[in-house]
Length: 123
Image: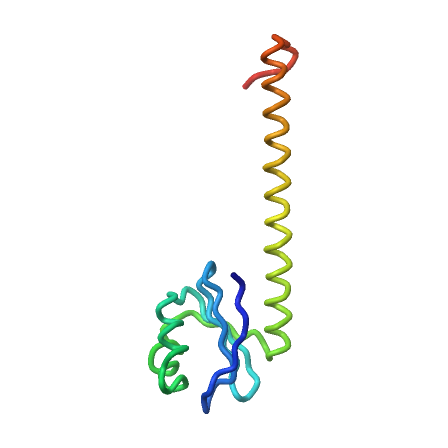
């Protein structure tokens, strides 16, 4: 799953998003700055999302606890997320295609072996 930004009720933050496979938390602040925090466990994201005071919980438990990178503004963050989605889709397609071609090759080699054709080099 790729992070989707969700609006939050907070005096400090406007949106949160989380990408579980990469364990990346995305945060958009009221001033428009967008940041990502790396290696954030899923339970930390859930606790943040469900906190009574999201801004206070973020300041106490996330802000200085995880490696962070400023991405820019919300538009830059959305562009990065969209590029990530496109890249993951392209990688998944390439993996499926490689798997299909590998299975075709295995099938062809099995046929050659059954016929006793030794014109290929075995490693």
